Image (cartoon, rainbow, N blue to C red):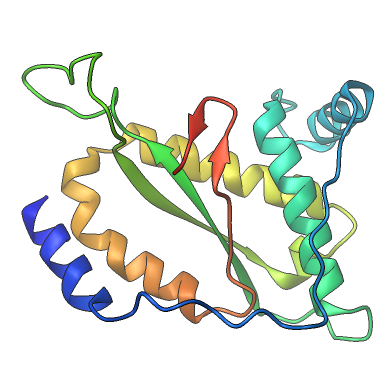
Length: 180
């Protein structure tokens, strides 16, 4: 863990400036009703090969990601082999294989970055929400089944891949996980 922190600080030193906000962007809030979410969940479950249920978090994130990328890419572009990347944060506090659990009074977080990658042709295709849902679900399961401390040295490589991609997208929280 100490090596991961040293790499992080050395890569990010002096880069704490603000980002220029393009003038052609707006901020908006979108609300999905319970019926809309349930419809999305049913659609994804029905389209899924193994017909496994999908969580509200995953299907909502998949739907949002697909529609965001569709607005950024435009309809005239070809659906080629380009890959889009989404960074999710997984809460590791209760998933670390430690000799003693983290105390319930611990104030802070213990986050691991997970990079979800989907080909443009799949993400923007007819079953884009299904492709995104499957990829997000797989990535979360993969991260939760691995020894997170052993995978920590590779996190920087994944984040670099995400940063260098076109339209890198990330999520800043979840119903059970607030980021600050």
